[in-house]
Length: 514
Picture 1 (cartoon, rainbow, N blue to C red):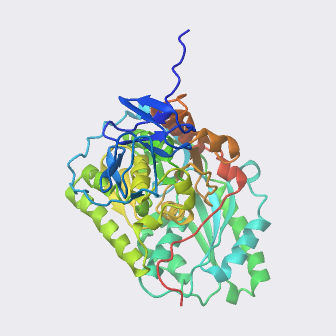
Picture 2 (cartoon, one colour; picture 1 turned 180 degrees about the vertical axis):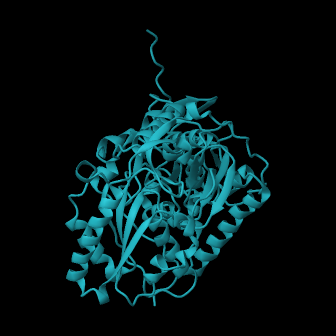
Picture 3 (spheres, rainbow, N blue to C red; picture 1 turned 60 degrees about the vertical axis):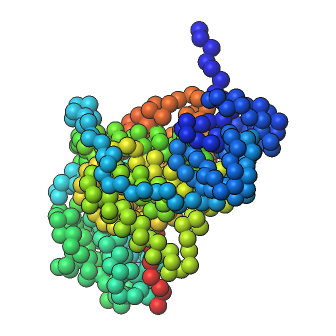
């Protein structure tokens, strides 16, 4: 039996890099020889942190992933810890090229891609779940939606042939300025109404709010008439139903009728091309861009090759890596949409005096991420290597296959809400710090970037990509494992976030509160 080679204590991600990432704790004075570099570690380094492999003079660029992640503020000696104390972000040197590196996708045969058991909707969408959603138009009716769902908590696949009754409360719907903010909320709520995983809907309003019930059950349909086809949508107004208690009673009776309607819906074999996969990362660490994100990127490539859709989100976590996306754009028009989204977000931040580098959280930095450039280069790895075929607004309905980009914030619950409202019927979420989050109607698969968090938060994590860092698995191994788990979850297997009851729904409010 051949003895397995012990992994090196540091990881070099690209031959052009002048830093390496500590895989394990490294004590001061330890001598490391890797890829032609021999350095003596000058202070104790914790896992995920960066070590200089060569002298980096003040003003010179620091490279990781073969890309610029920052500029040295002081002279950095070989073996020295490289982090926020001696590096600042560097957004220069990003030359935008459009559609210069857009690969041609090699599609799988239908037999190779495989199938899952899903709910074929009348409009052609396919659900991975079959929920009855009780959706509030505003904060004022949110309590009622929760009470209705609580009264029907016993409804389940085992007893009623549906996945359950879920409340979708939120804190928005009134006090909005008329315009972009209101339109975005309407698009988000409409996206949940017409979601593939929702078999029928009860809308509940107070009656006088900005976000009017008639917008959703009237004739306008917010431009989404096609998605309504076959969808049973009913509504209740509290001000004409007798207040909270009577509205809850009437709501329970109406939902019981919706349950009977949805019981007729059955799972049937569906092609993997019907999967719209939202990808997100939260509570990232330095290993996210080494293990979990590239593994999910491999999954993304598999899904696109199967004819499906993979959605990259979180625009603040693309900044510093946006030039990689423009090169992969299928054409110049799509590439320029990436830059348009970037510029929109810059203007949005400027309204409030913010900047891109506000994004890395204290937890990100503790995990070894020094700035947003470094974070973004690891984050975009979730999108794999296929051509970028589209760019979508927040909660805009995704209407084409392939690898696409959606404008969402990096804040996890808001980002996941946008992905769900855009029609994602599956979500994969990578984490290095153990973020716990889910969605009311979309299964969320959690993937850890390191084995420690997989052990510490075992009840949250579905797949441990930390095995890549440990030398126990390859990116291709874990990526294939994620793909197969997507197939099983899409067919009904419950994720950890579903078993824990996570149902976060937070629309993105971009304007003032009146």
